Image (tube, rainbow, N blue to C red; front, side, top):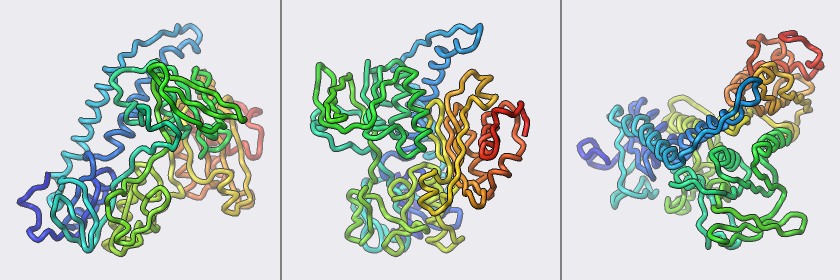
Length: 475
């Protein structure tokens, strides 16, 4: 709640921030450090999506699932016997909730008292009005406002879906008892992560997607992950359309259509992971002429300004990248431009992204298709992990590395990785892109031996030579 002794009597602030998640906190802290008086207006649970229902709980449970899988997969090493770990789903969910509560307190609630010029106001939904914001029956004014209200899970439009009890990503992560089986709707990163997590924790999983797994990733990458997940017993149905959903024998039935033929799939629960929609309802955007897109996300320029002078937006509520670190970055861009501190422009050219499946999927820069559309004469290299010594030693060669470069200049344009340590490896490629490196320069860079990141060097060398003919550490 707000501190009544600190709030300006006339309700006037230098900046009003709507939304107390990652973007909202980033904006408030950046403005406070610049000496500005800030009203941080809550919108939902303090901390927002990432700490409460997104990154933190999902990755905590994914890590637990990895530990379970590691025990059963230990037999890939000669002389090591696999074992089956016992999973107590209710205890895991409860422990995850405790972790979430602790991180929300430490990284959000406990930070507020350290910024004396920030007033946290949590009195209900906020609405934009001429010259300010209305919240809790009163009006606050500011010449500058940042909207950072985040997003929520989107429910697909499928006949009969509203008549059954459907879980979203939050619902699955907080389900008090483990279901025997689930159907996961959607093959994006959320669907892929949750499907594998649930399967490793003892749930029978069917994942269905209209196109293919990870449709935004390189085709080779999506196929490699599909093979890895199917090898673990996950049923993956692709290239289909949805007909209807209905209750069935205490559970749910999903009828899909593929090649003109209907197929009915059944499970105890249905989990919808069909993307997210921006939290813009009730904000009063239309009355102020603030433009939104078909997802109801706020359209912003490279300075994070909306179509209404003085009003900016950041995070998942905008039409920009939906990653927590980009939300915080976008908020800083907005504050700097709103107050004329340091001119900044939203730049995601070297933005790394990660899908926390196993093997992990990660990428940065342009894909092959994107590079071609941007006018580049494209060349690519694809390196299977059985060429990487680290993967051979780990007895785990699932995955590959794909690099994209300009054929005329040899400059790296992007790359994607499917590998057990792909999440940590991708940052090296991000730095290479940021430095404008060529494939030749990357291929001549020294990398430590028996690391996954060494695969980047080998992938770069693959443009010009057959690395299978090199000895260890050669080249």
